[in-house]
Image (cartoon, rainbow, N blue to C red; front, side, top):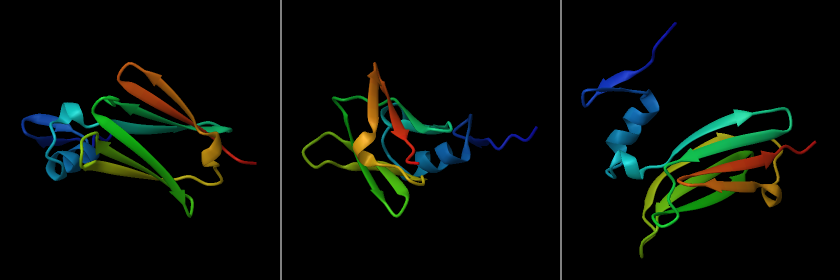
Length: 112
């Protein structure tokens, strides 16, 4: 088994979290995290540590790239970070959003 974790600030973190910790100055507990799952009919994007009173999520889709932009909900809509996913044949009009406490789940149907 290969472990790709890195040691940074006396803790083991993934390469993705390592890059985020260097690039973004917000405390880690304020940065949402994303992971994606795929089934035959849907894509599921789970977003943790997303707080409606602190964050704004902007979704766009162009040339098969789904872009999620996470911004601070303040007067300037400061960009915290963004994630880009390559997803074939989806329709933004049918994305479902399920909220639960401090997380949200995007359910994205695949087009036939």
